[in-house]
Length: 171
Image (spheres, helix red, strand yellow):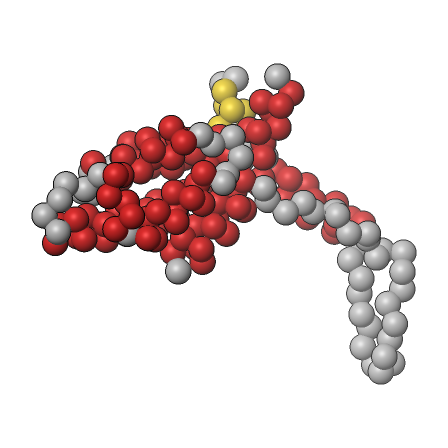
């Protein structure tokens, strides 16, 4: 459930958020009044514009002191990915302890959910095998959630986000 039901949607959302404004506005079309009692109000261009601007700022990377920071959307996805990875890494370590082997990526096949998680991360845009390996090694090395783990997740999600990928394509 964690890799396909939680991580895949969260990482996909961070990497490629849905665009607002892809559908035509119905401001000029008067809605049908089926009963004559209720007045249906269609979204107006002012409301659509407000939503589009708010969503655009939520999914856009921010610039702070000349340095690009992750978008608020990416920041909101970090705890989800962090908690999921922590749970899966703990499960993997327990399995390794039961078998008296040292937890390492060479034994990831023992925890299919962890292996599937790595596959989800490899499918992100602008993500290399090295990025995935580094991220997973942070989680296998530490017993508790650390700043290094949080930073590794943040970097992976930010680098795969549409704002970061678009900037690199322009360069």
